[in-house]
Amino acid sequence: MSETLFDRLKAANLDHWNAYIHHAFVVGMQDGSLPKTAFQFYLVQDYLFLIQFARAYALAAYKANTLEDLKAAAETVTALTDTEMKLHVQYCEEWGISEKEMQATAEAPQNMAYTRYVMERGMSGDILDLYVALAPCVVGYGEIGARLISSPDTLREENPYLPWIEMYGGDDYQSVAKAAISQLDRLAATRLTDARFDDLLKTFGDATRLEVGFWQMGIDAT
Image (cartoon, rainbow, N blue to C red; front, side, top):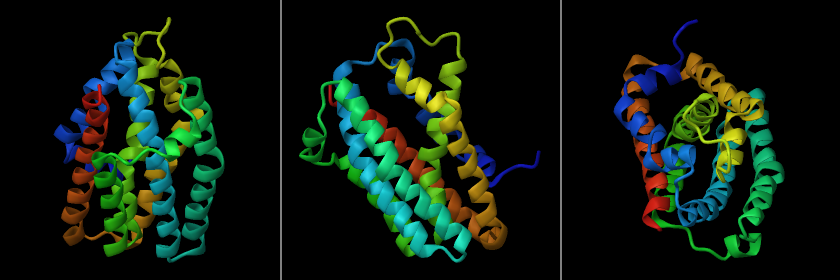
């Protein structure tokens, strides 16, 4: 199998990537030791993040040069607003957090920094810049979920975070992550040049570091 653009970006940012996927927040979900207050804070901010994520994919639809790319972005917006956010609300209700409460919560600075950075890359660049900025979240959650769900070190009995692990490690989300990798390659086929790679590398690295900050945000809230 040939190396994907995602593989190249990840390999060149491996220190940041490992800090992201092996963050203490992730380890805490794996062994069940993460303070529940940290996870609840994360859940509320993740709801607000999804709103901005949907806006980013709406921007991707605007930036699309082909009908195929436009449809793909538009379908993602619909999936986020009509399906994933509803599932997120249901999940949060199990943690005693209502949608009204989430909507009334202010975005944390780390959340604002990350989501606005993604939008800035999309506004100032093209659709490839935007999808590279989105990749650490979309693909990273899939990698984390797949690793945790298959690890013998993951606590399965009485682990309150097991549903999160099963969601991102499950077949449905794994398909989403794989599709995101393929989409990057399709876009790169007509847009990527050697001269441009360094800019994309920086975008990927910045977004990955912001993901680290997003995890740390939850821990710092305890």
